[in-house]
Image (cartoon, rainbow, N blue to C red; front, side, top):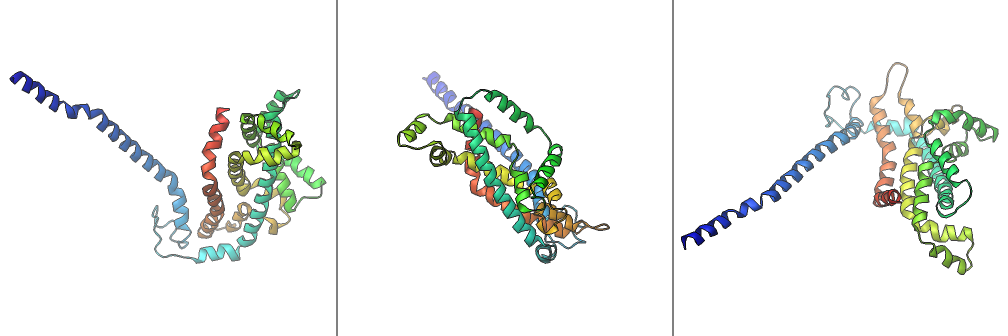
Length: 297
């Protein structure tokens, strides 16, 4: 009898030990969460510092070291950036150029991706190989021929010239994203559309492109970020027309020969970041799905 009772006590005392791995797993997850939180704080801190600096006085921006709390909120930094430096004009130019550039890239990349993903033709692998080679060319290598071509078309120092310069390149990543997605779609979709009398253009724009919205959202996010922050090409294309500058180029207005308006520059940086954040937040749920689908293909 005592042996049975001893065995029972041993089984009861062994209960918490069996839960040991579970507690260790929770402890490990907690430590990983704390580590990721600290890493996130380090990653987000520069943006928080710029946001704080945009509300500080010029002498306070470096006087308080790494402090994120301004002594007084100076809203005049935003007023100065928006009105006196001309950021209202630069903002309108950036919106116009970026929207037109993204629309051009989406249509061109989707058409090219549809052909590469759904069609078989001689030299297809060669075309893809050339695409991949151009992917590694720096922007500085192509700025001269792009400028000469745009000048020969009479579009230099115009919004249309900047849009063509930014949107008429290879854009290999966007094209391959579309190609991978279109390749994964069943062929019955096109066959059903042909039975209904639809032609190739109708099939693409009314059947295939709407189905590729996750990829389109990803391309919009990536190309919006690229076009919005483009500096070299808009700078070259608007040298003689300062009123056509974009926000990225207009940032140089805060840098003088002997001094720099750091608080105004911080306010301008926050203004320029807001549209990018809004676009990403509105379309982020499609981003991971489309990238995962492209990698799978």
